[in-house]
Length: 264
Image (cartoon, rainbow, N blue to C red):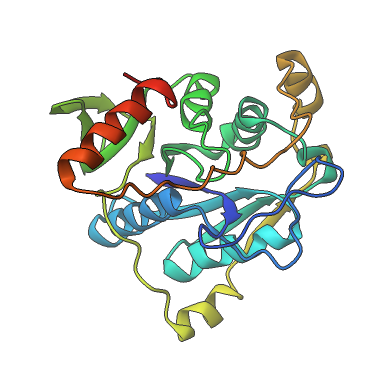
């Protein structure tokens, strides 16, 4: 059994985000880029399966992005992935999640991966479309937002737990399949310095648009979403302090909520 883990690189959530003057993107100057936190769960889950089961022969990490994205790919390799695939081409820079799913599907269809794992969403655009779209294009089942994953003894199916409103859903799925991972599945181990050094020697296959069979035709047939402008959210008005006794302050608050905020 071969496992594929899809990794994405996003701005660190603690980074102060600024919009470029032309409004076409964020200003990436000095922005720290990290592995998407939800993808960290997927990386660790894939590596744990390889460590615990003899029938899991390899874990391949895949990323779509510019040269800088290789940093995130190397993190996955340092945690324990065996090899990597880097889809790097200017033609990939403007793809939306559906088009990215088509690109990945075209690149890995011949890879024979029984299980594909990735985070349930990116923390920047936050759409959560990549996993379901990838499953559809690979024509395999999809389990979203899994918090527990157990392979059957025969390696032909798995049981996944996923949180739903007020309960936990348990599903049994036959492989091959795509699973998107949620917080609570596992926590990615910290890659040690020796493993970071070893990761530099692990094989990474760099694929350009010309290396992906049918890329232009597939993506072109899908259409796509175009981001026209980026703009920061409006600034919040300053808060108001209400003085006086609690009863007086409560009356003033109710009046403001009714007459100014118009929420009651």
